[in-house]
Length: 515
Image 1: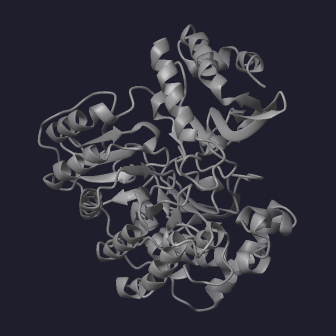
Image 2: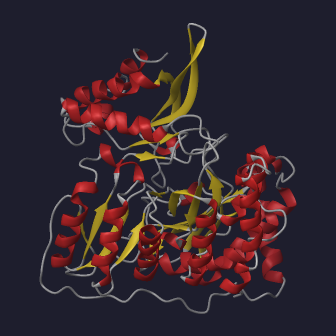
Image 3: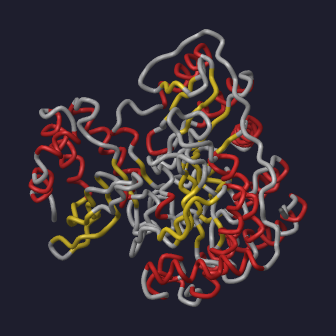
């Protein structure tokens, strides 16, 4: 398999520094800069006074070395704000242009490539965060996801790519990475093979993926990735940016069955070419025994390895305190085999811990972690930071958390909600039991900040459902709406039992708040 060395990526850095300097000098407008800088995984934030930088963490895996590098950068450059994204990357915010370039270059030496983190490129390959340690998983898909990520980096400069190419791997029907409705998804089977799904995606005109192959041996997955690229080159609409996503190929080919046939034809071309894309070997994580110590609590997950534990840490809105992040890096450095895994719901899992180590991680992360299922809610970075964001999704989440705490609702009265500031669905609003998308509503002839409400989303494989759009709620009424739902659900033992027993009640309450 071809790989790209850091020295090759570094050849592109002078251009980033030059264009970034022109942008901050007012010589390059924000649209032109956005079109250029996305290749580097960096964008200007709203207002054009700072940059963000996206650190790709292939398969969501943050090794101790990558964790230490990120912590050192945060400390050395006094990075004030970081964000765990729904694509399992780490975003550094509020950087000046020079700092963004310096970190980008240093990251390459640490094995972290930012290129392709934005723009029309293959994005960070996603993977079930507990792959390899989760009880009941079909098999460990992490090594295969990492191999796919390495291969996809060779396509960063390929011609005629989709506007985004998102690839996901799931280790069980929980489908945490939405593998069945990504641009390309590999869903594990009990027999140790993959079913392959293609041409799905969230956002405008969302689509579930088309199953294009069954029982694929893991060593063959790269053939399916190349076939995805060839299929888009043949049938993708790369001239219209609004439709330059793989999901539109379902219609272009005449429907899901016709698309599956077209994909299979390209797959056969790849096999017939004689190119060897077999993955000869992958490195699985070594199993480690416990030391006899134990840990328990709502944030503790016993691993399938006896005596080993994972601890989940969910900073509100996926925005960890930088000091806690750095302290956690120091703590894990002394724990053999421990590492961080990022999750698509903006959580971080600290895995391969003994019981005593898990207790230390719990204590360190307790002040900065969600207190309930509702507080694990997902939010994109929001319109206060993102140039294309319409609404401040992080601000809405903070307001809702305050209201729910003041109402003293019990855990489970509200589900994890998903908030996107715009239709791009970076907050995956279409997958949640409750979801919100940034909108605007005219009241007395004046536009008011609002969000469109979605209900009934479900990501589980075999039960995939896109949330239904119910209508628009003014932003300042959403906290009260959630409190009323939570109070009604608490009386029935929780949100999901209440929804199942009273399926019309949610819409009845929503009707009193819709603008």
